[in-house]
Image (cartoon, rainbow over all chains, first blue to last red; front, side, top):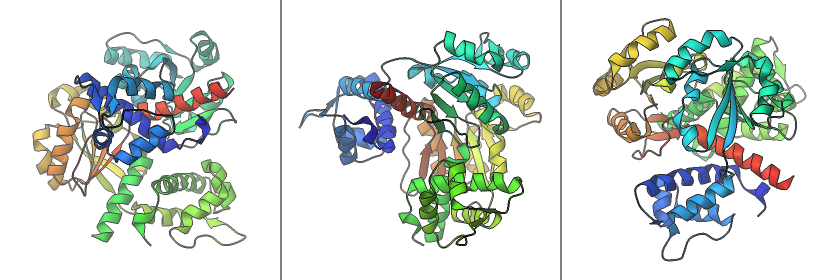
Length: 217
Length: 217
């Protein structure tokens, strides 16, 4: 398996296949055809087979895939056979909504530390929202807490002006994976990974398609 | 210009180029080379030139791009020469954080209507957070309000179990673009577009890269 040669879009689709398989498993189904899996995930069957073929042989000709097995296999491929421990930095509106984001926990991700430059300001409203006290720490403790709590992923939800500084601190603390929600490009040294979640970039994509359709139509 | 042949990744990068150009424009710069633009955006210069080449000739050999002009051109390409009017459905933690998401407004997107099945429950905390009263409407009014307020994009921030129902209502109201934050696949008829924002899918991608690096190293 040459992991580095796999297209990013394949990884993204695998993640969606896992989600669909999980939903179907919950409904009590045990077997699914590549055509059904594809249609649930909004792709075609050839795509499903091609994506899986990067990683070996799955499924049985004429039968399909065993849902539970394929789900486990994909989780292993994606590195989801473990809990990923995350820190979040910047507890404004978005940060506090991610603190209580249910899908993280369901999917092997857990926020084990929260940081804000004004810990005293946010602690009241957050605790209220989460229905339990959440300890918000000052970012000066980042390095120490990352080590103590074995944090591997950092979520940046600060204002854009602070994002690079926070990324530098995460790098310094040895956090190799960053999910950046602050709408600005940040830079990290080789060996560290940043994925951006820019809502407006995705909207731009939607706007482009909608405009294009109008132009054509 | 064959709009439909443009790769989605190109559109995504154009959106990032626009963001970088805007940031640089604010710093008072007027001209930029493709190499500098590329490095700001984390791609290479050939990629920038290739992406732009889909849409015509930009920049001047030996000089680079006029920042303001290129920014305007990209905004025109993406359909951002207008305000996009959006509705948001589901005012829980994530929904309310998006209601006050500053980058939308800066970037031609504006939420003109908010819906929740329990409008009376959310109105207090939201108003507090936004520092101004926000009218939360019952979803039964969706179709009427979409027409009145000329809404073209719907943001779904309900629990996953409600997402398809909300999508159906948006389709019925003629909203052609949907940004789905509910972690489940939704289906819409031809001519309607759904873009998903699944935080865990992006984390899965990060987890995959981090695991893969460990396996190699």
